[in-house]
Length: 214
Ligand SMILES: O=C(CO)[C@@H](O)[C@H](O)COP(=O)(O)O
Ligand SMILES: [Co+2]
Image (cartoon, rainbow, N blue to C red; front, side, top):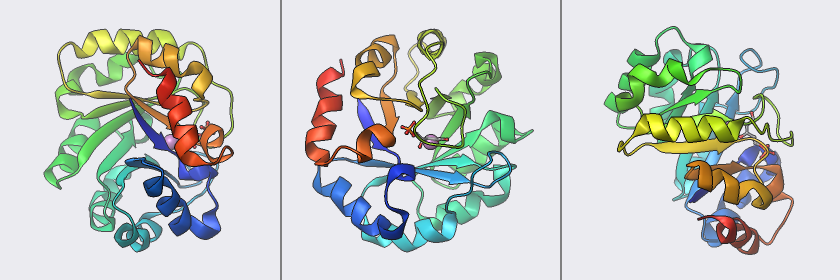
């Protein structure tokens, strides 16, 4: 299991320190929640902030775009240093083209689905995708409660993926308490914001999640 801590719950005034703390605690991924105030009600940071912090970290930058028409900004996020760019199925009319363009630019391509979005939207783009992100809360805010219907969705998606090497990432309300069931259902990348950053030291907290993973 890969744990990707969400900076949404970190100190926005000192993201450099948050990145250092994660790296020093043995984490390898970090999750950036980019919000535009339109696709979701909240606004966070964008490509410029990521670009300034890229030289300060060796972590794998997992960038979750909660923005309308993400196809407008793919090159910007590549230049900013994103390793994985995740777009929302609900935010574009051109899912396949956008995923293909992300890969053409040299990044891994991820597709995110809101809790109410059915899995059939990704059925014909499974080979264009390195990761499917299943939202287990409605996007926009940290600290919300996990939606239990996600377990069945993970299980069905893992069957749909067959032998493909595609990550299933779960985002929203993830804690050490639900980690085991999420992994059992077929998830292999977990995002955690509030249940991670509120519990330093991070090496100990990371182990608390990994202890539950199967
Ligand atoms: O994408 C989002 C929210 O839209 C997430 O990445 C949250 O940041 C997860 O936060 P917690 O639910 O773990 O507090
Ligand atoms: Co996210």
